[in-house]
Image 1 (cartoon, rainbow over the protein chains, first blue to last red):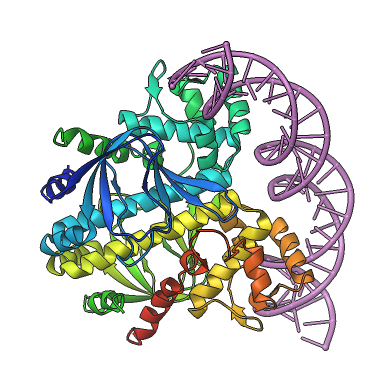
Image 2: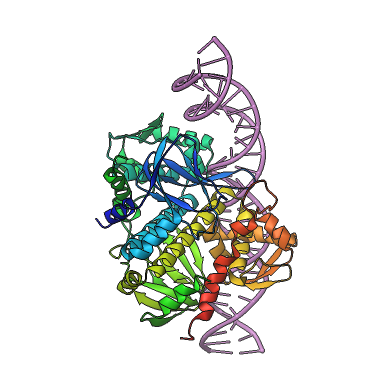
Length: 246
Length: 246
DNA sequence: CGTACAATTGAAGGACATCAAAAGCGGTGG
DNA sequence: CCACCGCTTTTGATGTCCTTCAATTGTACG
């Protein structure tokens, strides 16, 4: 798989491993960019703060992701990265990456694609939030996270660890934690999923897909596999596995 | 300016100019990727369709933007690109770009940053939609578009052509056209802006910034210049100007 | 055992959607 | 020149999804 090459090349660079506690900030909105990170363990939330204190989670980052690639080395970070669980990251400095790209053009192509992939996720998130009801948003998010973690669409009976609070889910989806709780209750009462203490039990996977608004049979539109390419999360997951034990 | 280099290098590639009518589709969600485009004239909307026919505008694209860079050459487009106004684009094939990157590593760095920039815009859009009221969303969008077009934050008295219908604005912001109309009426009655026949008149620019939720004086948070880097839109605009008349 | 955080539930209110109709406007053809 | 058409905007009435505020109940941890 082509993406494996990113890992190989990046691992060849000089680096420094860091362990972070749950709640720690990897970087903060407004800081100067200057380094970037390969996540090897744990979950991290990317979030933007507003002047009035409101917080929007932009993306959940799982092991294997490359984080913090700057727009311009002189620019400040547009969002914060905070650990949801204890995490381990490998740090690189910005000049390292730039010179690595200049030396190795194929790496650059891969990094561009990585960036485009992240943009794709942001767009999907946007569609989810703007066009769907709370029930659909939550079902969609849960399905996406499962797929990213497992590397495949979940089937009935699976139990999957998702280390998020209901407040996290709300902050990602533009909902209050209260409403997430109510909506999860409905999904539970309908025998679709149970989300107890950060363990997600899939009771009826096809009902979950339906609740997420993923009717596979629609007219000439991209199938489920397009909206949730299993490859994306899977790559990220496997990069992490392929990493040296550090 | 570093970004000018992208233009120089891309213009050196073999290309083909295309003119598109208003309403024409540059590419469509679900099609195979295989070419990419430099916009030199007109406005284009990137949008995603759902199975039930709902449509979400992901971004408005103005002259100077590089469009359609694929995740993987084998992948299908995740969204459609439709002309809002008559437009002119320069087309390149995917292998051209890839080989150009391999030959010219500095171009690759610039393209990565371009991709990161697009992601930044998507994140900003997400924050706008999730955290703000209809009034704030609309004010924010208008302010952003003005800044992109003019290359600077607009001042009172400016009249700026924004070739969008109120329905477009609604589809971008997760609102109905009806509600956009109502909200614009309030902004008009308050003497902040007037949006008549796609001409935006700025009556009170600081009130507009306030309505957009951009209070510059907030505690340790990034200033306005961070949330709306004038450079971004400006670059794009200038690339287009610098293009050969084609 | 007390404290802090997460989840749950209820009641009340608001922001926005939906449905429907009318009016303004430009373009086209008779 | 006027009639007609389609598109956009506007406005009203009604409804609903979600928020807000508040209180209660777990559950983990020192």
